[in-house]
Structures are given as C-alpha cells and as structure tokens.
Image 1 (cartoon, helix red, strand yellow):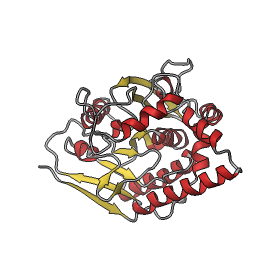
Image 2 (cartoon, rainbow, N blue to C red; image 1 turned 90 degrees about the vertical axis):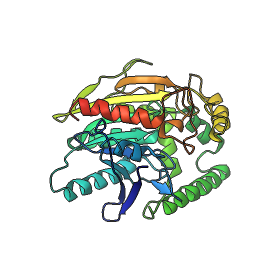
Image 3 (cartoon, rainbow, N blue to C red; image 1 turned 45 degrees about the vertical axis):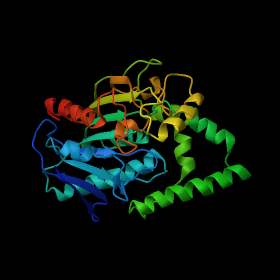
Length: 312
C-alpha cells in the first residue's frame, strides 16, 4: 500500500504531499496546487480536505501542494495568501519551478481565477470544480435572512466567524481571521457579477455557454477548464446528501446543492452533470461518493494526464 506523508512546511505555510509512485500518467511539467473552497483546510485530525486525492495524484507522478487558505474570506485576500505561498515554492525550488497548475474546488476556483488574472506569470492552467462563477442563490438567502448590521446579522457574523477561526486553528492556519461577509458578498448575485466584470477571462458570454480553452493574459498563455455535478443524493451513507437536498431548493437550475450547472461554466467545460454533489468532487465525505460515477481520485488523475499531454 502506498503511504502518503503530509509534511507541514512552516516556512512556506502549506503542505506538500509526498508519496512513492508507480506511474507517470499525472506527471505534469508544472506542479499541481489543490486550492480548497469555503471551510478551507489542508488536514484536520488526519482527514484531508482533498480526501486521498493528493496521494492518488502522487501515485501517478504528480508534484502536489495544498496551500493554507482562510476558511471564510474574499477570494482576493485568499488569492494574495496563495500568491505568497506560490512565490515561496518558486524561491525554494532554486528556479526549477516557475508556474503551477491550479485546481480549485468551489470558492477555490474563484481564488485561482484571482491569481490567474493578477499573476498570470505563475499560472499554467486553472481547473475549477463545482465553482459558482456566477454566484449562488444561497448567498442571497443568507444575507436576506441575516442582513448586515441587524441583530440577526451580528449574531450570524459572530457565530460564522468563530467557526471559521476554529477551522483555521485546527488546520494550523492561526494567522487567518475569518470574514464571512466578505465571502458572501462575492457569491451573491451582485458580487458575482462585479467580480466577473473585473475578471472576465474564461467566463462564458452567453447564459449557459462555455469560455475559451486558452487565453493570453499579459503575454502569458493560460489553459482553463471546469467540471461540476448536478446530483444531491449520491451515497446513502453520506451525511451531506440530505443537507444538499434542502439547499438545492433555493437554486432554480440543475445543481449540486450549492452551485448551479450553468454557474459552474468556466473556460472549456469538460462535463457539468457528474453524479456528484458539491463535496463529492474532492472525495468527501470520507470518500462516500456514488458507485455509479467515475471516482474523484480517477477524475483528478485524468485531468492531470490531460495537462501533462498538453505539456503543462
């Protein structure tokens, strides 16, 4: 059995997954960086946010990094934290690493887009997984129930930020202070539209179309891909399934419980209706995913292989 060693690198503020590997199908030219979404963490109590996915990628030759990202914050601030960590990796490599393949789940996809547009010299490709690029009605519902400045809003902010700070603490990310309002403001209808106007690269120009596969940003060529699911119930043992069934009622289009099918489109759409809920694509909860769909570990290995074959 291949063993995964998660090594915390205090000087870099991230984790690098190290494992022996038998194959080379995922051996990309540039390292893969797995960017988490909301409730971001690398490992808590021995459980990875990207459950067993780093090991699966490493087993096929990939170099994989998992950054420390604030659980609740704007993608701009999360993106700046990610940029700092990528710069540290580049510096520590002695020049052997210049670019990265960013793979972001949920808000991690928006965070990766921020880095792509801000520092395109560091990005070879961006792949977004179940990312609500055009926002999620759940954010509008949350802000509608607990408006900022009201008694309900203050109570919501205190509770949510406390949860986020606890997640940061357990993930050894003590420097980050959660800001639930900054996160929600990015995913309501108005905030998402403003973000897409500021960073339109890769966003479809039609309501449910797809964007270009390749873009040139400040002289740097970047590949762009997206994938998502449209199911809520995928495994009878998955405790998140009933929750996503409830949250899905707030979204008018086919969705995974958080992200609408069309909202997930970015760059070249590889597939937007996997039998996966919002957490299945990163192999949660504890790998309890559909038995009738491609396994998330294989899905990410296949994407790494696609990037490898493109010379990325």
